[in-house]
Amino acid sequence: MPRVELELPERFQFVTEIPLRITDINYGGHLGNDALLSLLHEARVQLLRHYGFTELNIEGRSIIMADAVLVYRSEGFYGDVARIEIAVSNMQSHGCNFIYKVTNKETGKELARAKTGILFYDYEKKKILQVPKKFKSLFSRDM
Image (tube, rainbow, N blue to C red):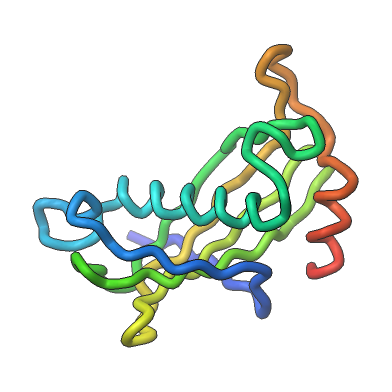
């Protein structure tokens, strides 16, 4: 079975560190796939907050996840600190990708890489919206 390949960018715009909790560990004794997606969500919220946004208010627009790709590189264990780097890429008219590199802070070993496809969205009207200008200008210059 061919594996999914996910190329990482040369530069990331944001980094955060999140300790792995016991609730992040699955019955195999390592970071679970559901927990990884939750960690990425937390990191994305932190990135948005860093720039003065929330998931429900980026210049009056919300975001919705369109897709996700998770590629595991090694195991993470309880007590490890995940260093999560994020890059915003592939800016389109209605959305973009968030690319994540997750490493063990202490060892530097890559745990995972991931992508979440994000669309700008109006939850009341159930309608996809254009990428807000400020958001686009903040992240387009780094692409």
